[in-house]
Length: 220
Image (cartoon, rainbow, N blue to C red):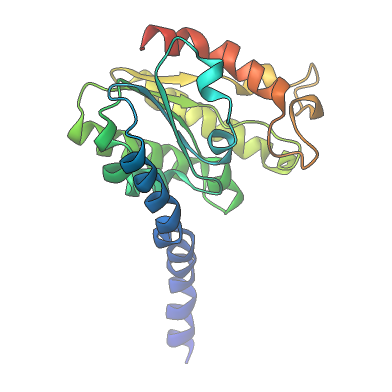
């Protein structure tokens, strides 16, 4: 009995991981992107923005970068592994000139470690580079939101691990939006967020635009 109990306890992390990586949950969202692409083919060689709700909610993306061809393929609630899993459907067909990725926020909230976030980003890079070796990739740092203030130490660690990884890669860039979003006390600031304390308001996106614009312009 003790042996059986030990085996069951050992399997619990794997079961939890399987629950967290149920990519099929997003099939409807990905199919909607594909239907939209058939009805209105997006531009080739654009700058592709992909990731979780911070990208999905960026409805003014095209207007915010008026001189750049952009595509928004954010799907809210997603994790890094979801963008990797669906890369052949929502990255490969566009032959993007560059990719801006925001993800990792939900990963930490769901119990992933900072090391897993770094490793999952590395897996994303490998997957994309397998079919487009030269594409430039930018990782937008995980934001310090009010709603996830308790995760701030893990957010810092994940961001630093991704930054260190990016430094060693060719044409992979870590873009620091984390630091300018902090207050003088080093804590998250409510001024960047809507009422839920998680999703950004216009001021938050304007900060992102200022921070991202040099990289986007250089790769458009």
